Length: 100
Image (tube, rainbow, N blue to C red; front, side, top):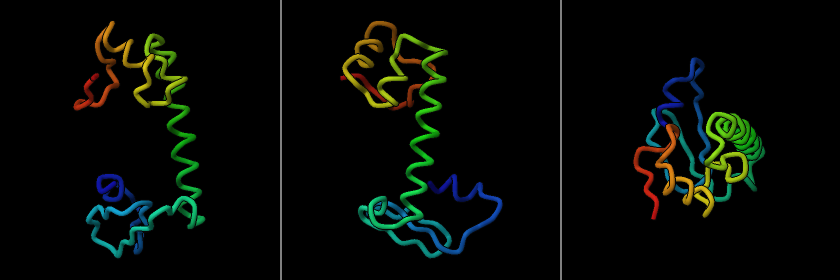
């Protein structure tokens, strides 16, 4: 979140965070627990983020169809974990992700 904020060309003067952890930004920041159910701007951001993630997962599924990205949407489902055990992590796996 901090990297994304710092990369913005237009810097906001106020940030609302969905959750209870503040990212340490150089502007006034408020944590809003359940913000995606309470604050219209957070609701909209949440929808945009999920749509972007789903489109990315669909594209990754085309590139590496064995991992089930189109159906697991980035969550470590049983099918996804089995694919990792069988073929190893995909190129897109988070560095710290481990199959248990």
